[in-house]
Amino acid sequence: MILVLIDHDRGEIDPLSLRALTAARKLSHEVEAVAIGSEGASLAGIVGEYGATALHVATHSSIIDYTPMASGRALKDLVEKLKPAAVLAAGSPRGNEQLAHLSAFLDIPMAAECSEITLGSPHHVLRARWAGNLIESAFVHSDLLVATILGFSIEAQTTGGEPATVVSFEPSLHPADTVVRILSRDSGESKGGVTLNDAKVIVSGGRGVGGAEGFGKLEELAELLGGTVGCSRVVTSSGWRPHAEQVGQTGTKVAPDLYIAAGISGAMQHIAGMKNSKTIVVINTDPEAPILRYADYAIIGDLHQIIPALTSAIRQAKG
Ligand SMILES: Cc1cc2nc3c(=O)[nH]c(=O)nc-3n(C[C@H](O)[C@H](O)[C@H](O)COP(=O)(O)OP(=O)(O)OC[C@H]3O[C@@H](n4cnc5c(N)ncnc54)[C@H](O)[C@@H]3O)c2cc1C
Image 1 (cartoon, rainbow, N blue to C red):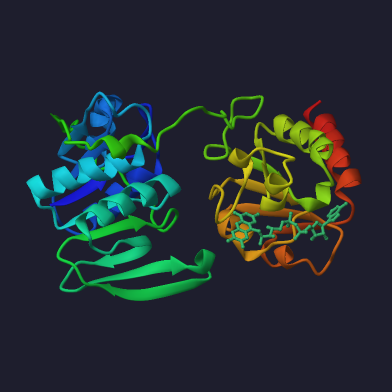
Image 2 (image 1 turned 120 degrees about the horizontal axis):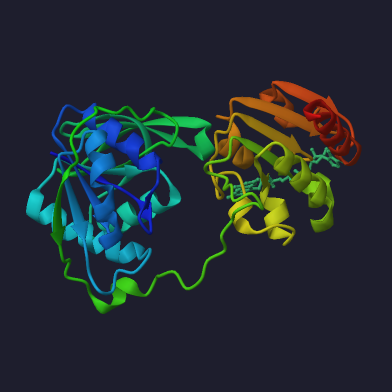
């Protein structure tokens, strides 16, 4: 049996978990799912639809919201009981973090961001390294494979199955397991309530925007297109925008229909987060900027002139 961690934010599933379920099914084993926290029980329908027969739900009075070390402990308890062949999760920051805790508790290796898995002795994986610029072929020497699935390496496929059977269990947590927990939240939503993860259009700005106030133009264009604003790390490090908007290796990995990169040079850590976008439009004063290699369309010029011109042309076209 393959056990898949279904990550959720207070009951709202991370769609990347459905890709992990699909990857698990391809390993030709029965697939069961696990969600941490009582709100996870509401996901029985969707995980059943994507092929899981059971949904184990870890409930405990100390598991409130996201507590990654407690997740690791709960997974350890379940692994010892069910003895799966592998534990998989989405290769998201949260998926990686929770499985890293599981591996640490079990004292076995963990393979992050795998695009291909072959179970065996040893297991074999292909996985993305160096922000996706290198594919590593690696053997994992442990009976149990603990691995996360590279975000966009597989599409989620439904089986149309029945809702999974919910099996609740209470993990035996230690007091230290909840020292890392959520204290407060920054919604990370645009004015229209769109987040980076679900936006179809992202208007992203880099150092070339010049300061926090310059982002007003990007916000206006994003709102007009029903999208949201993203940015590079220079922008979040400078305090111009919140971290929730950062795209890249240490930010959010996105794949919208349209990604507009304005004043962003195209460092590999940024490219790692947006190269799967369907259409990439680059606005940059430098015709040699590395990001141009990834552009479907490029406008060479000053974003402070081009973005307002685009906004006004789109407004006119929309009447
Ligand atoms: C471990 C690690 C992790 C990292 N993770 C991330 C990450 O997740 N995301 C990320 O983005 N970066 C990340 N970085 C940082 C990354 O290496 C780059 O430093 C960063 O992406 C550069 O940001 P930028 O493109 O905005 O700035 P710059 O590289 O300074 O580029 C600015 C661009 O703006 C253009 N420009 C200037 N003025 C204008 C104008 N008026 N109109 C149009 N264009 C203009 C310039 O020609 C230039 O191409 C990481 C780095 C490390 C070491």
